[in-house]
Length: 87
Image 1 (cartoon, helix red, strand yellow):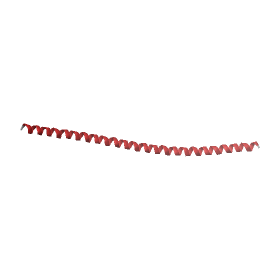
Image 2 (tube, rainbow, N blue to C red):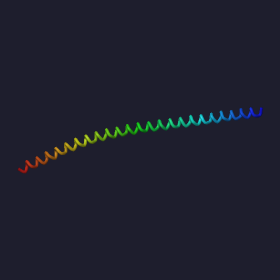
Image 3 (tube, rainbow, N blue to C red):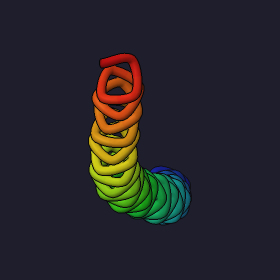
Image 4 (spheres, helix red, strand yellow):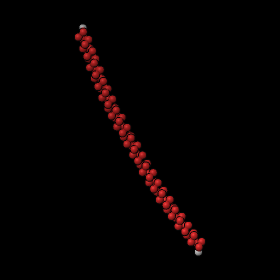
C-alpha cells in the first residue's frame, strides 16, 4: 500500500506541475499576443504619420513652387519695366 500511495502522490505532483506549466505558458502566450498587437498598432501609427507628413510636404512644396513662380514672374516684370523706362 505504501508504494501505491507514493505513486498517487507523484501523480498528483505531476498533474500540479503540469497545471502550473500550462498556466505559465498561457500567461506567456497572452503577453506575446499583447506585445505583438502593440507592435502592429505602432507600425500602423507610424505609417499613417509618415503618409500625413509626405502629404503635407507635397502640399508645402506645391505652394512654395507656386509662390516661387509668381515671385519670378513679378521680378521679371519689374526688370522689363525698368528696362522700358531706361530706353
